[in-house]
Amino acid sequence: MEFSDRASQLELDTFVKSPSSLLERLRNDKEKLRYRLATYIATNPSVLPSVQTLISASTSTDRSSIGAALRIAEGRCTSTKPEAARKIRDFSQRIGDLNVQAGYSAAGEDASGVQAQSQDKGRTQPPRGGALLDGEWKTKLANPFKPVPLPN
Image (tube, rainbow, N blue to C red; front, side):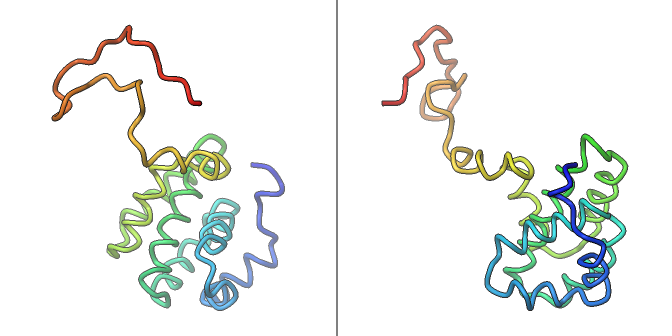
């Protein structure tokens, strides 16, 4: 993990003491909430109990951002700290909140961290030309030798 992707100890201590302070600071910015929280969790997964407190204090839209933050943090930890990634995944699965689960699942569809910002645009559309199945119900095998359409 790069140093720029880490939260300072002061930020972490503040979050642990008062999880809802993060919501107050980033009140209307779901994107910042998502990435800031992901950074806290990825820097030190021991803040997870505070995340539980944060979930209790947050609105349903904030909860889906919190779920996304959990998934992003898990993605950031997967290669460097697999044990931390497992902890985050287990924590996410134990949370009984549907909004958190939805945010977690949605974030998993657009990879993790920096890759997410560059990839999430094209992910929602089905792949063009590279699909293996064709036809109305996607049951017919497509021609694998068909030329790939190039963008204009």
